[in-house]
Image (cartoon, rainbow, N blue to C red; front, top):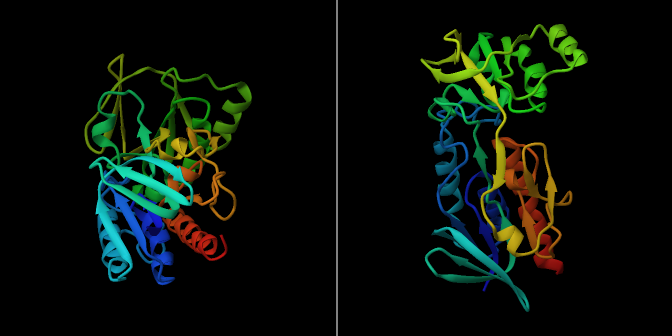
Length: 294
């Protein structure tokens, strides 16, 4: 039996694993190799790694993690989990079953993209969700915000700090007079036309009436979904966030199920690489404390 099984080997999972490895705990990382930010060429806002290829960050972290002799890495998708008399069992898609005294869920989330032709092909390249991650590189250029609901007001009011901003409502909602005043105060142009597709490079917004607006980058909100059913199978509580449900944890990243911890994007309303790494470090340390004191 392992001390801990970590489900998910991206930034949060590896950060949690590193804390436990340094505590000389016997751990298993189960990872299917699908990072949320795999569509982006560069990662920004992570201290010491600003501008690095996200894959390089993950690969270097894994090489350092695997230097610890108590770490086992398994390329598999964890499909199910169940509580035991003492601990938990996790079964992978391969059919292999593994047992541990504790579990860390670092499964990440899946992004549901707005249904606009041409958007998916530009995701992570010219269409983004995080201004802190990608706004600076647009060099105060022409920025768009594609509305998905009233939630998109947050994006629209933020992005003028990164460039000239146009808010494309696309029928998603209609701002109130007060909201229009807020947008005007921030210098945001409001476009009511319906969008036919995204085209061009970096990105052109093409309207149903044939008009075209060229942008340096476009931001939109996604609908997020926890990537794995394991938290629900184990009975963990969830919270409702503005973009989707996420695993509820306390300040130490403990879930509602004793012995199960969660970190990274699956366990917060929104995040990025730097936050995921911090979350993972907390979850790893808290899991170690649980192993020490039960």
